[in-house]
Structures are given as structure tokens and as C-alpha cells.
Length: 203
Image 1 (cartoon, one colour):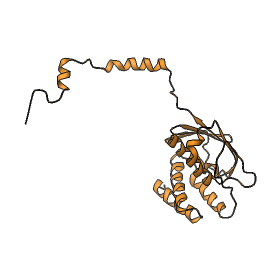
Image 2: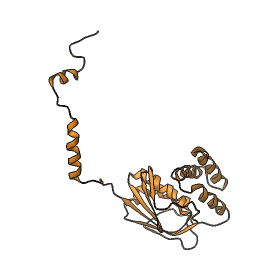
Image 3: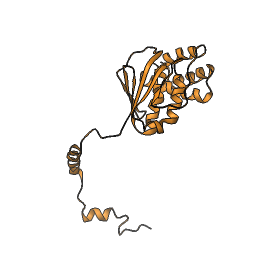
Image 4: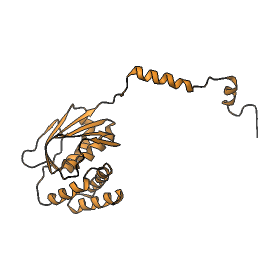
């Protein structure tokens, strides 16, 4: 089994060999490490994408808005992802972002996961019927478990989830009340012991 370090390094070099700058190649290496760590087919999709990248045309995007369409060529997932990370502090103010016609959307996924950590919010990503909940770059929950190459998708939808507790205030109060049983009532002996050296001077 290949180590995450091997996956990172080889992916980075392959991306550079395909024509990406070293900076973008570094990002791709990190992303492949992340996808493979979570059991998603990163290497499989990257391998096919890099072969296509040399002979096919992909649309590049610079400014991401609420609705993004590419009618002629599919969006490049790498350029889309790097710009998404760069702009995420502005994008999370929008209710929903829709992106149409994206090539190899699995390669876009780790960029969104890392963006979730940057803004400190969960992000819900839907690639057609495939759903992904990205949790601050710590975990990816998904209903998609197939080990396959996904070459194109018609629509990606992205929504940002506000940080809220999963429990109500009453549940918190009940739990806090139980925690009070561990509190130790302060006594004079505890006060003296916590005051420092006390009356003993060892100098």
C-alpha cells in the first residue's frame, strides 16, 4: 500500500509534468493525500484528468459568483478549486453557489474541504445526486462510495452551514447540573494550600 507521503509527492510531480506550476502542483499533492485518506478515488481521477489535460481544452474561471456556467468547455476542477479557496471568505456570504459543467468534480472536492477549515464552517456540496458534508477539513461524510472515475458533472451546488449547537439550551443545563457533582467546595485548608508556599520558606 502506498503511503500518503508517496501519494503527495508523486501526484505533485505528475501535475508539474502535465504543465501545472509548482505552486498548483503542491496544492494537487495535498489534495490527493486528503482524498485517499478519506477513501475517495483521488489518484484514479487525477490520472485520467492529467492525461486529458494535455490534449483537451478546459474552461478556466477567475471570479466565482452565485451562478457559474460554462457552455463550451467544462470548467477545470483545479483552477476552479484554487480560486474557490482564494475567494471563500467572500463566497460564504452567499446563500448558495451553483457551478455547471465541471470536469472531474472529485478533484474539486478537497479544495472545498480545505476552504471549510479556512472559514470555520461546514460546507455542504452536492455533485448532482452525490452529497458531501465537509467538516472543517477534519472529515468528509458522503453517500458516494464508488471507486470510479467521474469525468463530468452537469451541476455542483454549494451551501455554507452556519455554526449551531446540535443540542438545545435545556439539554445543556441538565448536563451542566450533572457536572456540578464534581465541584469541590472550597475550604480554608484548600485556600491555604492554593496560596503558594504558605508559611514555609526553604531559602
